[in-house]
Length: 366
Ligand code: PLP
Image (cartoon, rainbow, N blue to C red; front, side, top):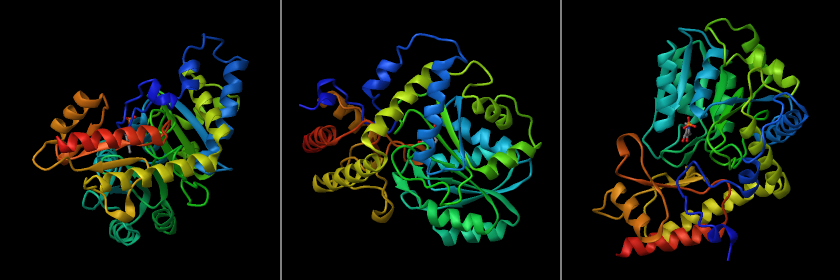
């Protein structure tokens, strides 16, 4: 039997995800000098490996002790100034959170709303940029964890680039699982959290910045910045340490996760997610569940689906938990109790998905 099942890894919510065993081991690492060779070695390895997963050779990867949402704030205070025009793709709860954060910082925000389950099209984005005028940045949720939709970074990035806007990408539930191709797609700030496809505990915010983003951040004076100050963080990271006491345990864990991913191979990691995503969705449809996302934009890391007719999402979640021990999520925002969500990213293989499908089928029929 697959070791993951032996160990009872029944966590199928879309994050936090099960920890890779090498990550679990790394979390017991004793404290060492905060700017000593062990930390520096891990930081150097992380920089190189994480750049590959973001698809950048020219960019830099910076790490903060925080969660993904902090990346919204960090990108805003480093790249923008109050009153700046921005366009945010709001295809679900996390796009809305990004737009709300931009509002909170006094940016002039235009939202591109679509039905939940759909993705923003390049035409819709272009129209919004043209209508808003003088757009300094476009915020795109790569993978909308609330709806299980993946948006197309290539076409959306191109539209934003053509308008001369910076492109900020929420890749919280895609980085480390789906190709991002930062350089090719003209992306400037790609943020994520360690607790999803990176197979680590929550608490580390990962941001990949383009040379353009580093340059803008070095000149930007629109907001006061201390902990999020990119020039300070980038200068310390040149020497492979943090300006403050770095989140050392998280750094050792992330280093271990990236080494495990390197051993599997970047293309193999992406391919595993692609195959498992398809496999899981096919299985769900075979046993009669309806998936929220439109077929052409379905995510390979999260599936959002309707519970059986007449059953609320929370009741179905509880039923599955009681019957099998498998933990799935309910929805978010306006569809909180109308849909369930299952994660298939990070440390996951087919046996867990088979067990999940089997339990779902049984719970559906009872
Ligand atoms: N963006 C997306 C797409 C997410 O899935 C999440 C968390 O699930 C977040 C942002 C927020 O991340 P965090 O909870 O780490 O702040």
